[in-house]
Image (cartoon, rainbow, N blue to C red; front, side):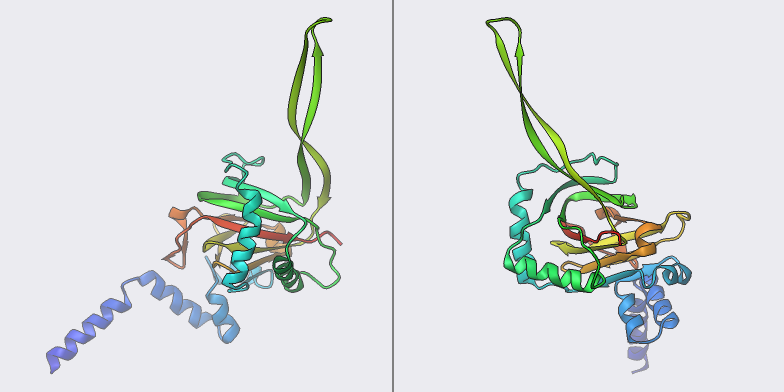
Length: 268
């Protein structure tokens, strides 16, 4: 009987410490934070220190399962129509994104519009003016977003076709057709960004702009909504980790193709 108890005890100890990092992080989180809200926060936010977590607390939020599977499917079908016409790009204009394609949408179907109203209701103040176009960012499985601070200026552009005639002499005339990007308008963004995560879990890492040794990881589960406000928006870089670097609290978070549907407000 004693031998059996010893054997069972050893098995329990082995299971408890199969991942000592996870065990330590879970214990630290439980010990340092009290109450139901703190326990919930530990599910989606982890940082290099309690001090850095205190800095971003109130400026970041992740709402798990914000949309249903059915709503995710409707959103995906609606944005996929425009995305599949584009190629994945591996050179972003400010070198922030690798392996992506993107589009903007002003018009949405009934279900999608209802979802976006919910996003805006929880993410932005009631009287906050909102940026009209919704940004849709499609990240390839092997793509990633480098640490960056979003520009406060967003420009809407379209490709315009320009016809040019080049006369070489009175007989020969050459028609040149050029497709060039044309900027329709530029608008400045406000203090808040809110994004829905479709198709894949991922890890977003926030890093203080002036201290790269500190960091905060946000677990962006599939169908979740993340919100970055104020200091988290302007004083921290943010990025989406590569698949091989995608860990949260020591646990692997496999990365697949990921689409984010992003809403922004305008400055007051």
